[in-house]
Structure formats: C-alpha cells, structure tokens
Length: 113
Image 1 (spheres, rainbow, N blue to C red):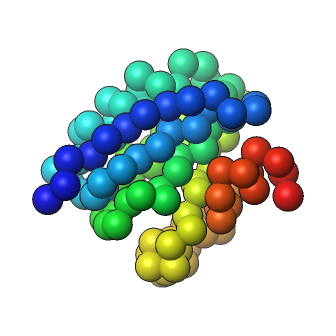
Image 2 (image 1 turned 30 degrees about the vertical axis):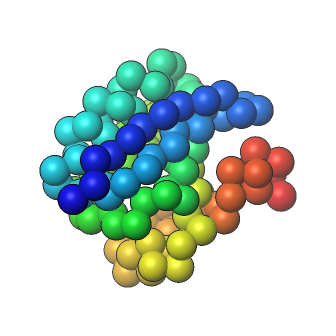
C-alpha cells in the first residue's frame, strides 16, 4: 500500500489536484478530505491529475463521482487527467469516460486543445 499524496495548484482557469499513490478504499477518506480542502467554490473548474496513480479502485471512483456531482450542481466541473491506458480502461468499463471530461495531460486540459 502506498500513501496517497494530494497537492493543489492553480493553472489557468483550473484548480489542479495532483494525486500520487494508490487511490483505494484505505485512501478514500483522505481523498475526500483533500478535495474538500482544495476545492473552495461550488462553481470551480477542477482537474484531478491521475498521472502518478498506479491503482484506482471503485471506492476512489465513487469519491470522484460524488465531487463531480457536487461541482456540477454549483456550476463547476471536475475533469480527469488520465494518461495511463490501464486507468482509462477502468473508466471505459464503468462508463465513466462518458461522464467525466477526460484529458491526456494537464496541458491539454488547460489549453483547451
């Protein structure tokens, strides 16, 4: 098990939340709390960068979906940066690739290209 590290920065119009480590049942509360700390407005545009996440389970996905719903209700949004084919496969299997805006890199999301 790897500890989950959560950091946030502002890049362009986005709050970028970078995750490093496994996002699993043991890290779900930490992820929920970290997102709550870094997302300060209901209409915020957030990117969760999963570049350094080797494993993402259904509990972690559930936390991300809950925050996405909350932000969309407030006029905001939450996108995912998913360069890993393995994590992308998880999103496709669950249908969440059609729910989230998914980008290959933070640069791609911020530039809108």
